[in-house]
Image 1 (cartoon, rainbow, N blue to C red):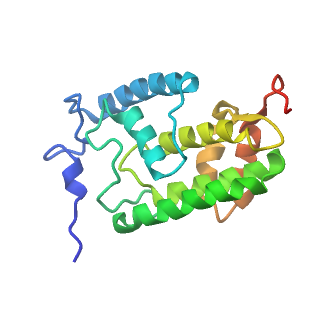
Image 2: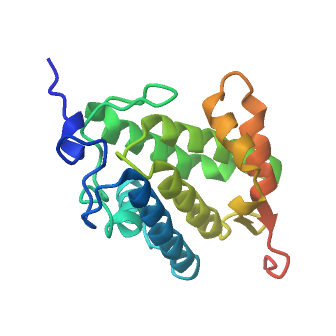
Length: 204
């Protein structure tokens, strides 16, 4: 029987996640988390985290975004987790994430235009979110990971793009992730809208 580590993440007798800010109110913690991570995401637009777009790179991004807030920043979750769907068991997180990111780095060579790129990004975003490697902050960490990935891979593609999530419809995006296998094109369309051609950069 697997040990249930769900409660280890919470302040005793509450539904508030243990945090480095000694906040005991769930709403206040959520607001503070958004405030801190927004500032850090803004910083990363200027100074992306260097890495090989592997498991350690994703963990470094998560750690940077959430280290001021949560003691588990940059660490894989150790409990089972379900929201609208059941996510991967903690025992297989690392192996599945390693396979997914390895495939992502390999298959980027097959991208030939923004439409094919949107299918590529939607697929891997969904796969990483299905694994849900962290207890909290998976969406923000994964989106930043993909944003940095897109900028880095301009060096091997025939066109220059950036990933601008503000171009997406937030409600459609969340619905697309939730109902991926019912409406497969919705997530791709949101990524297509977010892929912006960088006009002032030309390939040699």
